[in-house]
Each structure stands twice: as C-alpha cells, then as structure tokens.
Amino acid sequence: MDIIEFTQAQKEIIDANMRRALELAQEGYKKGNRFNACVLVDSNNKKNKILQEAQDNTQREIASVSHCVICMANSFGKCHFLV
Image (cartoon, rainbow, N blue to C red; front, side, top):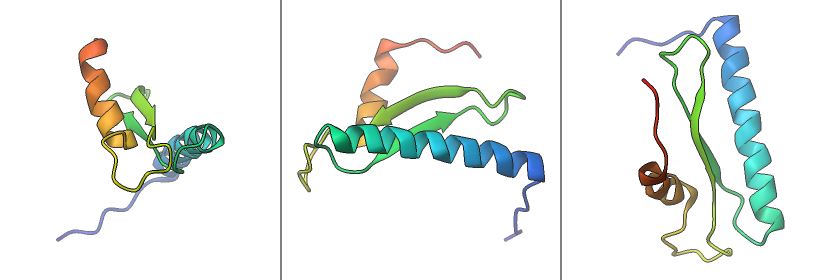
C-alpha cells in the first residue's frame, strides 16, 4: 500500500473542512446533541466544493438513527448536485 502525501495546499483545504465539521459539531452540541458532524467535499473539483454537511441529531442518545452520517444520507433525496 502506498503512503499518500498531501501538498501544503491540500492540507490547508483539509484543515478548513475539518474546522467546518468542528463548527457544526459545536452547534449541534449546544442544541443538546452529541458532538458529531460530517462534511462531504468534492475533492475532484478544483474548488473543493462542500457538497453536503450534517450535524448529529441524537439528543445525546448512544443508539440512534440520527447520527450525522445517517442525517446526511437522508438529505441526499432533498437536494440536487451539479456534476
């Protein structure tokens, strides 16, 4: 397996997207949810456009179908993406 090395520009994009995920997680936590969020980024696009983002909506329950990844998957039917 090859080791992937990111350029400085790629690292900055990854860092910005991770900061956005942390912001979302903090917002959700303030609403009473667990500290989880996710951001889906089109890395093939030169602009690294955020396609979708979601917060956890579990109300801090351990077993819940409202985990941020499930919330994101459920939202795909509600939006359209330009490819």
